[in-house]
Length: 99
Image 1 (cartoon, rainbow, N blue to C red):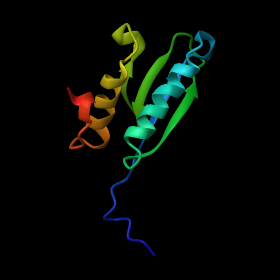
Image 2: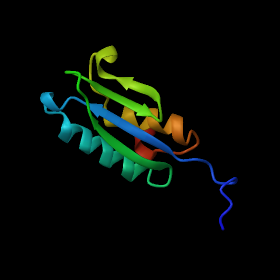
Image 3: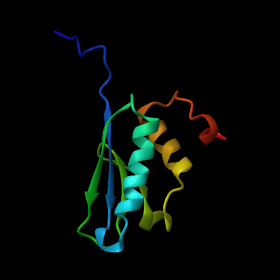
């Protein structure tokens, strides 16, 4: 039996997107990038269709770390990786995405 006390709980990233706006592919691309970069740090990435038009929010567990409506834009992938890193593994180097 494994001792889970020494293993930190992995976090889940949720990408809530507006399917009516056609943002599934953008969300899937971002999910792929996050899963590739944080394969050892995340429990998973959830793609969640929103019932509210124009929604694009990124959460780590229950905390919103990016909201398109508030920012007035989508996140750049480099920015998104930095935001997720700061919540799931602050010491992790992102290589060229840190520049």
